[in-house]
Image (cartoon, rainbow, N blue to C red; front, side, top):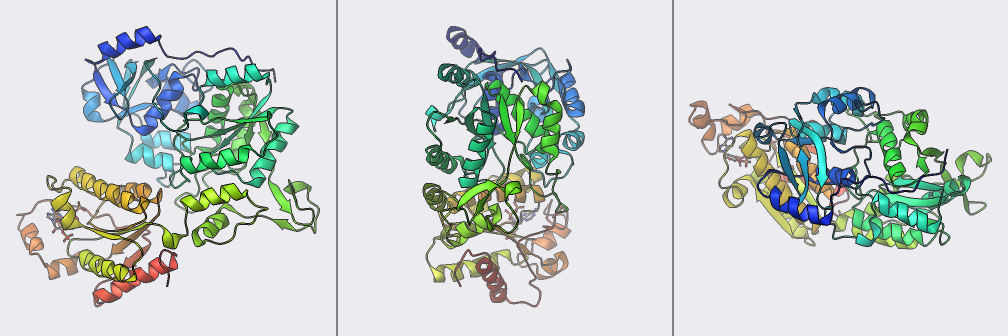
Length: 568
Ligand code: PPS
């Protein structure tokens, strides 16, 4: 592989003067408020991280990328970088029009000259890009449940970089990294892509990979968007900084990459390679199950663990980055050192702690040995992930009106308050509708807004170490899942399906609403004239028929105990 040409790569920004002028003119254009994921994509488009893309994919490019990983002109590109918008917005836009792209505070970052407006076949995109149209895949879930229905494509003119207030000194554009490598005289650079904290085994394997490739090392963690449930990037960056001291000085550097990952395994590995090439790297470490999304809805891995290495190997020349095989490093007790697993002789004592075991130990406040990680890393992890019994969490009841959610929720609240230790807030359906959602009705759209508001408040409570108990009907699976993702970033989400049948609820008819619904006096009534999607795998399902409230609340308490959220 030839050495990199570390000359600057093209960016999409205009000069400062032109940017000021454009910004002024753009004030009158139709404008789109970018989602967090779109902001990540736009940043890498504008700074050359996604070179050779010059904007959001046109329909021809999109079709080529989805069908055979190539742009319409034949260039290798594995990931659709698309601007998804709502139908309502798309209706106001015609090809030939310019639109302003704004961040979440309304700052204009770029102008998109729309050449294409098209409706994607999302099921096809899911099959081809992510390997299955299965909502258990986070990017497929995003595609169907968060992304807009229409894509806009066309070239982008960059006005300014998205603003970051965190770790500014650790963020570099491709050209800034290239300049750094030139200045340091680094010609061979191995990139290590990661979304997890680094422990001793990672430090050993990355350093070994760099030595084998006779190269310098770039630790290149993703801080844009990773897999829901991952450790937040603030904690991870503090951990990376601690590990950086462990490498011999001047061999290694670290830079943060504002990428929104898709967890697309093999295709993602190829994409990561192209992005690293753009950042001036010559090599990249590709591991087992690179960018793997976890299990599919049938409980199996989405991708073969070596599929990413195979695909990368196949396209290595076109990517322009050489793959460095990731050696699994294990601790050999007799020699008190890390060695590649395949080189350890039979009979030696190998010590290892899996990711799941590490999470368990953190959750339960158990020992994490020195041979496994660095003390500073463990301290940082313990600070963000205190034992579960000291963390905030959310109990989310769902079920028909009159199923008994509120009564059980109230009984649970009292029991938790008796135990003490953490503040408890009850977000009951009726209370929320009075204080947070008084203007909303019961259409699907309004119910979704209502549930997302509850989710937002519960996530803030959870983040701050409290207990949130929610008791809305929450009839839609996708919305419940969105709330789960919001909350699991900070603590546990315990979904409790109060499984009282519609017949029983109607028979009880505590508020007389079922009668009115039957008479057609209340429209869109859940279970009568509006759907309720039964949760498939809630943490707990409680039956209320012939069971008293106290017993139901007790079942929840037992569940919380078994999850380590409260001490018995
Ligand atoms: S949702 O779907 O989660 O947003 O509903 P939620 O906020 O929990 O509000 C449900 C309560 O509103 C009353 N109500 C209705 N429920 C269902 N469908 C219709 N059309 C409707 N209209 C009014 C009802 O009393 C629900 O209270 P609970 O506490 O569930 O019995």
